[in-house]
Length: 181
Image (cartoon, rainbow, N blue to C red; front, top):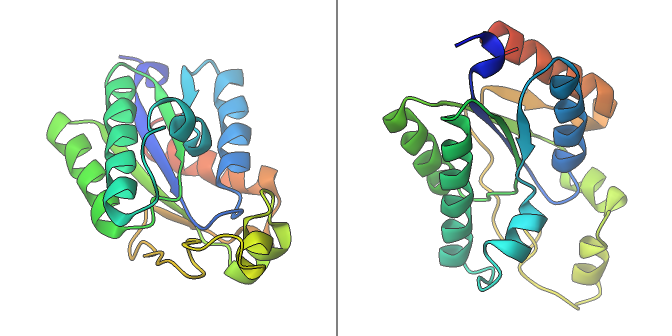
């Protein structure tokens, strides 16, 4: 296998509006430009098409993450760079996905998009923080529902200090360091 044929899952976890999806698509563009096969498993799209029957209980969130992890590992084991911008609020759910990848011998990199909740609430790209503040929704991750930040991610991005392109460049450097780009 050449470097471009080596698959991997790059899991971007963080609060809503942290920048996960924006960074994933910027990285995907970079990787595709270099000839890599890339797929982005956007958490919102997965919710709509693969996990539409699930709610936001702890159990349903775990099931959603496991489904995404299964698809990611399947693609990665077939030579695709899989970018997964998903909140995945629980450490044990993310660890189960990591273990699945390890069992299959597939590369898994966890990236914590560590944007402070105050910055996320200002960005509020989906209006979730405003709805939560107005009492229209509850169970918002990082506000009134838990988010367990990774203790030892492969990379921690402080997006409030960097542009999207800077963050994508740092991620690209990590992939180069790991022999994946």
